[in-house]
Amino acid sequence: MINKEVQSQSRNYTVPLITITLLFFMWGFITCMNDILIPYLKQLFNLTFFESMLVQFCFFGAYFIGSLIYFMISITKGDPINKLGYKKGILFGIFLAAFGCVLFYPAATFSYYPLFLGALFILGLGFTVLQITANAYVSLLGSEESASSRLNMTQAFNAFGTTIAPVLGGHLIFEFFSSPDGSFSAVATRIPYLIFAGILLLVALLISRVKLPSFQMGEEEVVKGWGALEFSHLKFGVFAMFCYVGGEVAVGSFIISFLEQPQIMGFNEIISKNYLSLYWGGAMIGRFLGAISLNQSISQSKKAVYMLGAAAAVFLVIFSIVNLTFSQISFFIVFIILNFIAFFVGKAASARTLSIFATINVALLISAMVNHGELAMYSILGIGIFNSIMFSNIYTLAISGLGKYTSQGSSLVVMAILGGAIVPIFQGYLADQLGVQHSFIIPVFCYLVILIFGAYCTRYLGHVETPESKSGH
Image (cartoon, rainbow, N blue to C red):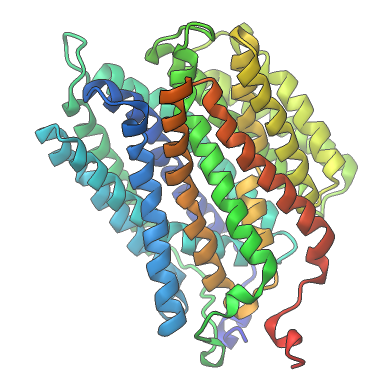
């Protein structure tokens, strides 16, 4: 039962949703900075691909450790968020992430790779708390039917942060704060991450001043034990999330190195970072479109108009951000059209749309592996727009119908972000052995799992049973 205080609160969640969306933007920006750090630290410390992927291993490994701790507390002591409230949980996550950013200063001062990895681990722990609290909180700010639409909207602004990060962050580290002689120096990361810490603290101050509705459950609903694991779709969803985050992070981590390959484009880091923005910019386009397409309260005719307007507006935003000509990014129009078609074939069904998008990404990855030049480049960059709705759709499908186990189930899904630590490591090893281009076989298997999960949910999720119904209560 939700507290009576909550039931009496206004159902206008616009201000809380805008406030949380700002947070999504910032953590998307800082997360995507890892894609800039990888090639930078690789050259600075003369690392192999495998060693450079320890950046993602430590950052996303923190998601697993943090979520495991949360889950163990929830099954022994009861759900921490239920006791503390979502607002306090969100603020704690922000402070922890800001502390991780501050730790980049000593890491850069001593120019010691393990210290960078330690800072990334703390930063990842902070974002773990945010993933558990903020995603579940957004799903509660309205009806369950529109949860995927809301999450896609907030994730769209998360993707806006990831789109800006390669351009702005790359400029700060590769150019603005780099050594005057053009050589690589760890000190180039000191000021940018102190700035990120300051912005996070300002966001925390804003959230602390905004009245956020409480969604704490009544005491009778605090259930200990392993109840969430009795839902088969949750267990499958955890594995699908592992594969999604692993695939998305692995592709993003290798784009700069992929475009540097002589048989692909032979670009340097300064040029490649702009194309990396297109990869994440595609996710932003797809998430705005997903927020409209998956909103079942909008008629099909209006959806087409709204989606067309949103696609045009976001495309112009991306064009204004990246340092590329229109002819260099015009190929993205083809992917936007294909994205439109995929959404309408999906018919606003989260699971069906998920399977369609995963199928397209498998095809794009295979194209990137077997082709050279611009076709290979376009194929790898197009994956971003079809990654767009995967996180929110997998997340909402996995926790659908969990009731009092929602936060516990959310911690398990967030735990699966471990995929972002494990998959890039495997791809890094394969890149050292077989080359960067052939290493993309790893993400192919990830998207195949997502395809199957979407098909499973399309067929079975309408018949999800709770543990109570299974026991006849």
